[in-house]
Length: 165
Image (cartoon, rainbow, N blue to C red; front, side, top):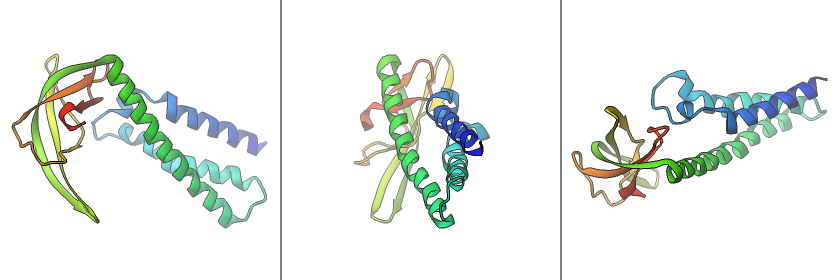
């Protein structure tokens, strides 16, 4: 009986992650708990439920932990691919162009990686929005430059800088 309940909860979890989260949660730029909900569900709740499901079978504990960890490695990238497809679809169907101004630019470096990132500020109906960090591969833009931004009419925080595509 426990196994059935855990499996049903897991199915509900996956459906919620992929189809039940609102755009406000997915594309929100606020620093509140809701912004972290998809990650909490994927990287905390998901492995816990997988662990509980696997424990209902007669499997060694180390194997159960491995299966739970593997679930994150499967669902995490799939969720990223899904989000990119949904973002592109939304921008294609409901995208509106506007002008944005580069207001923040910085350099990051890490192991085998050096990149310039920037953010643009733009306005929709008098409300200010910001793009997410996007890579300026050739380091050709500076603070104050005007760039083309396309945003989703229904969710302006779903946006991208056209020159950086």
